[in-house]
Image: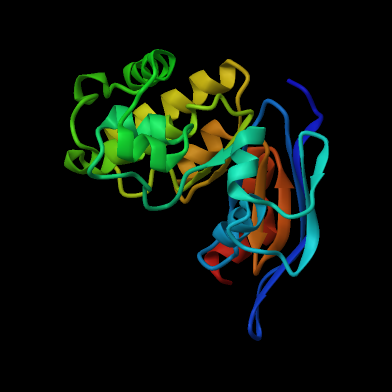
Length: 245
């Protein structure tokens, strides 16, 4: 595992009116890791994700990816550069088939949705991913017919279409049953073993502690602690933040 940082955030700050959601937040994601970003509700985790991926504009601070400073993070440019993300609520096209959902991710949306023209290579890649995620039998079904957990898996597969270097997962197991949690964990482990780096926001601390290293803890929009799972779990500041003492 390389210790070099694939993603670095320095001094990220975001205010909404008089509320400071993220304040002087600095951390890095080492290449080859499954890094966790955790914290109590309202600690700023999703806001940080949105700042990193260009869905929000930071008031201050910088982001660097793969050794290059990203002056104005933009979701499409970052996707093409190798940084992708999922969302707390899976973002899919319910009226398109599973295959079409995957292909939309790497083509111009208007071209794919209007013409439904799927090239052989794209189709092959889509079926390969659906097979990996246990969804291949539903390849031609409409995405809207999937269960909640299956929609999460589909979105996860979709962000892999462009063969990214880094995937940001926002609450990947929220609201899914234990069998689906295990399936998602298995996918993350297998993909990481192949060299894919992850940054994961997750409330399931049992999953975080067995899957992620390092673990970064946010509280009130700033980094409270960072380290190996066992060290973070026993940090008095972290316990205080979570227990509200």
